[in-house]
Length: 187
Image 1 (cartoon, rainbow, N blue to C red):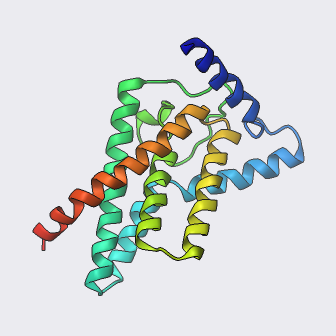
Image 2 (spheres, rainbow, N blue to C red; image 1 turned 90 degrees about the horizontal axis):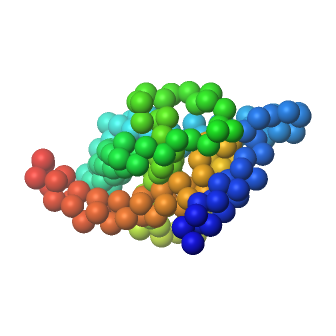
Image 3 (cartoon, rainbow, N blue to C red; image 1 turned 135 degrees about the vertical axis):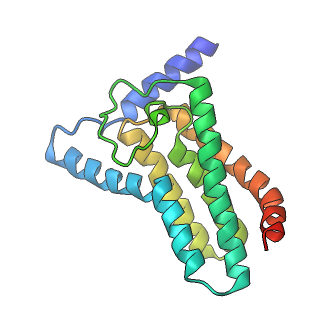
């Protein structure tokens, strides 16, 4: 049963990686679009974004939420890097190793998708703090686009993305429960 699931994961992932090697103009355009989506989900972008918001906000309530977001992004980086180092699953062979902004050796590993863990966290974070329909729709579409970018660019296997998303959702539960205590102690 396990070998069947591994083979199904590999076959499905290979089938979905239509933008891994752009051979025609439509594939090149698709690849460019999903590489831009890839950049929007990068950890360095989100850390910079959180710091920008924090230092340009004077409202204590907003600063608390931004602090929890920043802690969540940092916790996410630590957890997904630790799992990648423990599992050491290689990226798919059809992955075009043209990822920019990779800063650590763990980026050569595939499981779990760091973009998916981050957006699992962000998905639950936005649904918790911003209950409006518009915000939920935007984060839902963006999360789906991040998942598609990981698969269509051939960066990850389907299981890397699905498990990464679940890990990110669990990270929010952990961070939300404990970050408030940390933030309040540092005030």
